[in-house]
Every structure is written in C-alpha cells, then in structure tokens.
Length: 231
Image (cartoon, rainbow, N blue to C red):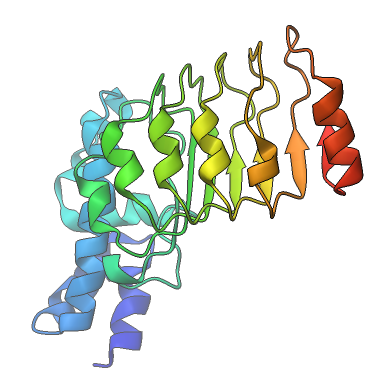
C-alpha cells in the first residue's frame, strides 16, 4: 500500500484504523518516520500528565490509542509534516506538566513555536540552542527572560504578551532580523533595549505595563523611523 494511504489511516481518530495503518507501516521508512514523530510529541506532552482522564484511560496503553488522542488536536501534529526533520512549527500549549528537553532539540528545522498554559516561569537554557527559530510566542506566566535570547538570531517575531516579565534583557538588541517585539501585559518597569540596532523593527508593543514610563527619545525615534509604537 502507498504511503499516502497508510498516512490517511495513521492520521485517523479511530483506533482500529490506526492499528491497521501501524501494521501496514512495517518496513515502510516514511511511515516509520511519521510514527516516530507521534512518539516524540507524546513524550513531550501527554506522557507527563497526572490528569486521571489520561492516566486512567486504558485506551492510551496502546500506541494507536495515543495517536488517536493526538489526532483529535488538529494543531498538535500539523498534517503537512511526516517526520521530525520536516517539522517547522509546533503549538505545544496546554500541557502544564510537559517536559520538552532534551527531546525538543531533535527538531532541527523548527521555525515557529508556541507555548501557553505550560506553567513555565522561565525557559530552560537548552531552549536557546534552537537557533532556527523565526517566530516565538509565549503567553505562560513567564517571570524572567534569559539574556540567552540574544542567541536566537533568526527571530523575526518575539511575542511575549501576557506574562510576568519585569526586566527586559538588553541582548534583544542583537536580534537584527526582528520585525515585531510584543511585551504587552507584563510588569516591565524599565525598557533599555537599544532599538536603534533593530534595523528591521516595524512594531513595538509595550502597552499594559503599569509601571513603565517610556523616554521621549524612544517615542521620537519610533516616530521618525516609521516604527509602530503601541504603549
């Protein structure tokens, strides 16, 4: 059977169809790569849950049962990706007991990642080894942002709205490709990033940081350089 047909079975939400697909996938390298992707995502997300609905669900004792549950979440394993090597975007939000590392470091072509409701007060240092990232979204109660953020040189969009950040690392100024910087709805008291180094910046969002007072110099620079400043 062709991989296209096997993939259709593996992408089902019906356990019996997935079981059929798993049988047909044997000795099919492409299908095995897709199955490994499911195993990897499961390891980072549901595998760490203490929710009784997960731990007491006997259907999840089988790989087919796990895959069926993941297939019910359309954004968890995007349909266009058939292997870890192909994955360019991941939405890993909604798993408060998730364990992302070192597993996430296998995703060598990752460009976009989203975290929300993961209960991460800070990002692990290993996260900043994912230097392929172009878009990063975190709305998760993040309390600190490491200076290692400066390692993510390919970032075009850094959206950290809705966290608890009070200090902005000046290393953000080294993200020369950055077009959007959203730090709204945080607890920032001082914004000292040298945005003059951000030659591609188009939008800067700093609204709803109650104790933040912007300098006249920053406001004037944004006005003179066609940077949309929302504050």
